[in-house]
Amino acid sequence: MKRKPKKIRKRVVLLLLLVVVGLLFVQSEWLGRTIYPIYYKEEIKKNAEIYRLDPLLIASIIRVESNFKPDAVSPKGALGIMQVMPDTAEWIMKNEEMNSITIDDVSHDPNAGIQVGTWYLQSLLKQFGGNLALSLAAYNAGPGKVKQWVDGKVWDGDEDKLEDIPYGETKRYVQRVLYFYNKYKQVHRNL
Image (tube, rainbow, N blue to C red):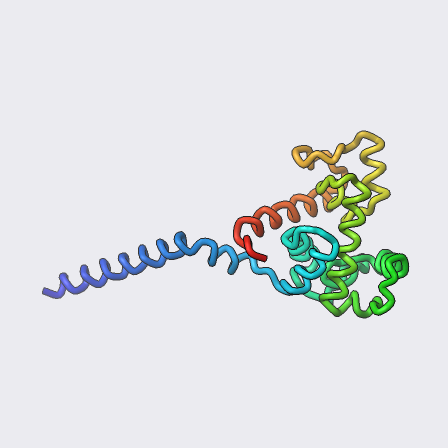
């Protein structure tokens, strides 16, 4: 008699495990949003609309740059949630008459950092004829360096040839942003 309850318990546990695993597969969008969260959605949406960019692309850059930490500072000195270099941020704020934003805001305020970073991304996309891979590489390595690669026929900006990017950090950066961009498109359809 003692063996039956043990077998029943094992079967119940196995059944519960199968139900949980089944629910995870059925609720994979929920699981995906849990694994790939997006913070500061309103700020991202607002700036994406202003600069006519996909909010999921902005979220992908933020994920790779700072993992949504608004006061992040890189070892090279890039600031804020979108990790813009101070000189670049100053140039953007001056040329775009963002008089109400300061470097301190870019460093700590998610909305200011997203605004400056989104404007910069839009500018790079215009500069590189809408080529996303080139623009992402320029966001990381700088537009001058990327122009050198293109002019020197080192890399033509083709996403299928990312291995041709001569900087390992930039190659991994572009790969990671594109990876998160694709994941976000799968699990965050309504941003």
